[in-house]
Image (cartoon, rainbow, N blue to C red; front, top):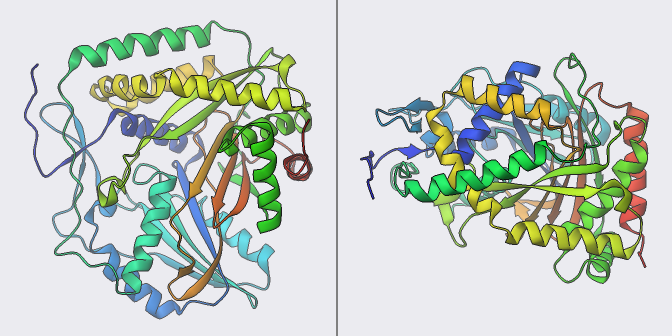
Length: 440
């Protein structure tokens, strides 16, 4: 085994990080804005904006990685370069709105705005209505995944309340991973066979991306469920998919709704192909895995003819998800992707873009379950948490579920011009009805 040296004070990007960088490059090239996302917290008591900005400025000074950028070492491994002296300029957008609808319009606009420089990766919004307050973190997916962004906000809450302090600054480090080459090449062979099989498989039902994205903006539809409805959905999942099988149940119901509501947009094909992500963090990892990406991916193929509204279909989806999770493909992708880091982004994005043009996917799906136990944020009762992601341009449309404090929310994210707004509304209405239906 040969391991090349690495600097002990650098965070070398993993292979999956490098793929995220390539997807960000593709998104910025196609839409003028990178692969951004947003976590929105709904609070019942307004925040003091002056105190909020003061605390945010002090907090961000602890994390120079939030002002970093990508560079490449002499050993050809890309790493996240930290500024020598972190002096963050906090962008906190504050707005007064008349109602919830106007507030969400402001928040949706915020996630569609590109960052101004290569060292800017987060922005904050505080939007107030006469009834409530919304605080959000817009973030660059190169810096955080969804779970990491949530944890960063909750860490800020601890700092705000005086329960989090550090000596100096937090600078995550990670080795370059330049060893165990045989294992990586074998994983690469298995992943290569998997992708060849996908590209030569049956045709996939998908919604073609428009030739020209309308301003590169993504639109969102958000649906939130109260405790009783969320419990009913969880009970339905346990009765049909099995205990602790909420995610496969949500995926199966999403498939039913996409197939029905978007049938006029979907191209003919025999299969649905859905990319899923899975969290590969180690338990109790703390600050070590707060930043950057700790997700792997799998592709789930479902026969169109097998999609039907009954318990048997939901059980089939559950078995298919479990089979993919058990196959080892997520670990293989994690290892094989380390080999891709030698490719400059301009080349890697071309390779990934070529594959995406040849192998369409039906829609993106994810489920994030937060079990932090937090109920207050900066002194205000926390009512709900919502994600609004600008997704990577694989399908142009995605269904994203979040569960927080027992409440389930779902966001439909789609590229403007991909579908009509009335069809997006119909999808959300049908999805709500199907989620609350007891299947037999």
